[in-house]
Image (tube, rainbow, N blue to C red; front, side, top):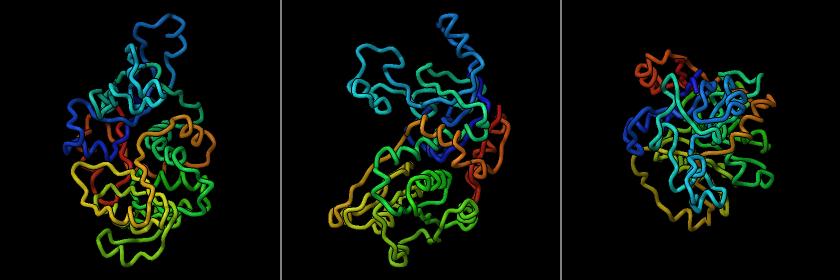
Length: 307
């Protein structure tokens, strides 16, 4: 694939700090077009050449053609394949480049009226959609999202399509204001231990997406007894946490990672949400180092690279 746009994610920043001990080309959020299909029939090449696509980032043993496939692939859990590579994250060069390679099994066609700037969000948007795959949204009248960054904003938009009241908790006024402009209710927190005393609201469903080890403490506090706490943050290093609130309140804790591209693309196609207001700036690929530094500045949301 020739890369048309690539997005810088917090995971990319954490990888540069040592997360997953990755070596190679990072980047896993992208939209591109098929430039060549290796080893395929003429008919297959004709079908795919020039198609505008995004790509599932987990490359399973079945996609590589390994036989026999692992137990996870046999059970349909390809994102947990025992021998998988992960685009730009685990043993697979990623999207901060002019070209990248993925098996055809991983490709998803982008609808004609979905722009490149929207399609580059498919991967993180799919991760947000995974929550709706894991929980029954009909059971919840309200939900809290802890965090005001890029993923938290997408999660709030996605949950808002299925749950009547969704509240975002964050510590950055400019990011909260961005959420309010698209109709998201917000509350400001300090991001320290005092929040557990100051925040009085409790929710049957809470999503921790702060990207910070301290976010889990507040998330446990805000989840009501017998409630569901979804963990979305990934970061390099350990998170100090007490487990007694989980036991005493009998919380259901769910780890949540990659999600369904088809659901994310359908949301973009439907027009129910538009992630483009989250784009702060686009850099040329040759300025990738500057772009990654810029992406870590306070108040910056999505930064894109254009080869």
